[in-house]
Image 1 (cartoon, rainbow, N blue to C red):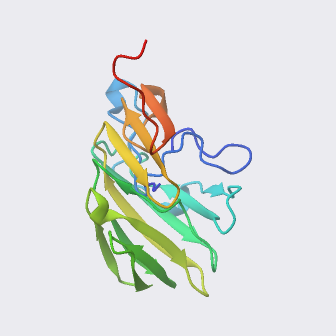
Image 2 (cartoon, rainbow, N blue to C red):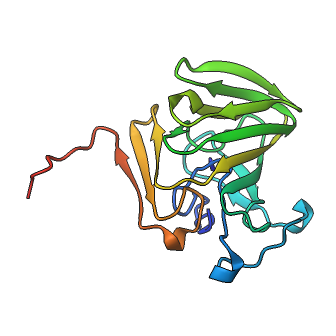
Length: 199
């Protein structure tokens, strides 16, 4: 979700596997090698991942909450956006539902097929269903925007980026999930197409 990754940010600050599932993360069952699970975790004990991608206007940091707590079918992440900045590219998910809860600060979220702007402030909750109705673009205002993102962890999934004319494909693991389990993870131009019978 993600937005909005288990591969973490790369050296240049971009996300490692493109999993912009805003709230997604999942460690799986510890018995299956998915890592240790502590059903109650303190946010103050968790590390932040800094994101400073090459796209102008995008900068944020994120703490994953779901994976450290042993989450499997529900991901959660805490985000901080500096004043005037955005997180992930504007997008929606074909197969996953997300939700946003504002903890502190103010900003704007652009939503849905009509791209309507909505002011955000502490205590606001935003439902982001699967499909174009869940399109969202989060933008911090004049103060740091802090929020929680929660997401289902369904795979396979397709993320759609209408403004950028691209799609993201994920199978084997949901966006933001275990990248080692990912069998497909790539971006394509939204108009990319080949004939079924092309050899």
